[in-house]
Length: 452
Image (tube, rainbow, N blue to C red):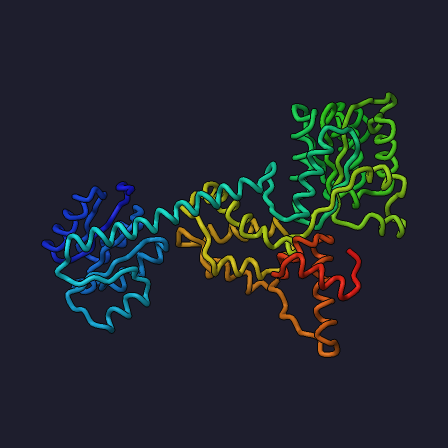
């Protein structure tokens, strides 16, 4: 048994307080005492205790139930044992309803106390082991700075490994906030260019004239304010990787110059007459449909084909909901340290809110939501109330209205087809989502004439 657990005894009677503390100390626990509920709450805020023995009737200030409720608010994982000399069914029910783990009657039996604490400690050790296993599981699904157990994301991770050492251009497609730059950095860091610069450029953030000089640099005197020669991002990325974010927003004139730079790996600085030659791997990213942009005439087809040598498509968060608990806990572990708050877990109720949200901003929105909850929470565990703003701000999944013009078999077929589309045709994953055996799903596919 682990004996380094801290216990706080709260009782206004000195004899009871001292004797109980002495019994627990003899068992090897670190025991502190408080003579009132308010003192106990102050101590709870300052230091974490594994268990609290709280007297029900304390005439001065707040009683045991109120003390327990405040302790539970500050330390949701704490085990609270209510002690009373007035044992009635009503008080027992009230105590347990408000969150007491146990209920014991004075005079206390030291042997009974030892067994009780031992039992609670065993439960807490199991919880601790579960936490360790959960973190090991998270590491199992971690790649670079990304976390996912979704099959499509695992395919992305595998593709990143395969293309990392190549020189070929990569186009990363995905909605805003899906982690396109993280994928680009993972490709760079796992390849032979890892020791060389990774240079990002946001193509949407700069107007045409600035973007051109930002990419290719300029010569002294080439325009007003150009008081000296400046290297562009292509030169700064020489030997490394140039990441062109939101490539779909690049102006037409710059598209022509970019195409030449990609084809010949050389270019002119703005206002320059000498060609600059570079060895740069280009990774581009977009949240737009570039094929549609080509059809509409807003994006050059030859530039699209030059960029689209290797394509990586990132699924939106709403299509990889199984990753939400993993991501949430990953963000809690990192952001709690950055924010300076002692938050180390998330409740089931809070997770349900996260799972019910549609996440139009994807992983970035989830990260921002977790940070906001950490900043505002008064608990060591994120609760549903800490994420209530998600419901207020919308984005909850709309309720499903079942069709009334289809037979039961037709409804089942549509659900199966929709699930297979969601999993990219992965039968094993679809069967897991539908909560049926793979063999059963194959039977249904044969029944409805759906090719494997």
